[in-house]
View 1 (tube, one colour):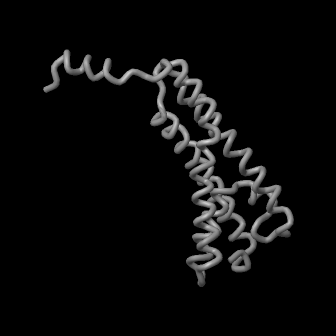
View 2 (tube, rainbow, N blue to C red):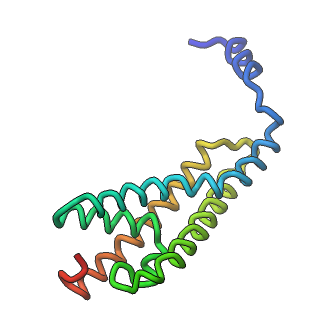
Length: 150
């Protein structure tokens, strides 16, 4: 069992650089841009799967990954729409993920003591909601269009 003095010593030994307010402001400033990292990784991996993979499984995994990482693609009608609208869709997706990161940062820093684990917890909740919505959109599109989607 840890004694009270050991617990207090561990708290004093690792202060927050700049103070708690500085740290909260940092999460609010950097969080929206940190939120771009997971969808970028998922999007790049999904594109690699789409380009290098063959068969229905790679098409399904690649399609789901790209739609989850770039929800703006659903707005322009990807993968069926004209590919000239994809850059605008990617810009919309970037703005969307920055907004999600801003919301996650705000929610994570509502408490006096906030950290990156709280930011990522809030972000994952919002990411799961987005992924669920994108997945439902793909299922609806597949049901309406049929096998031509894949």
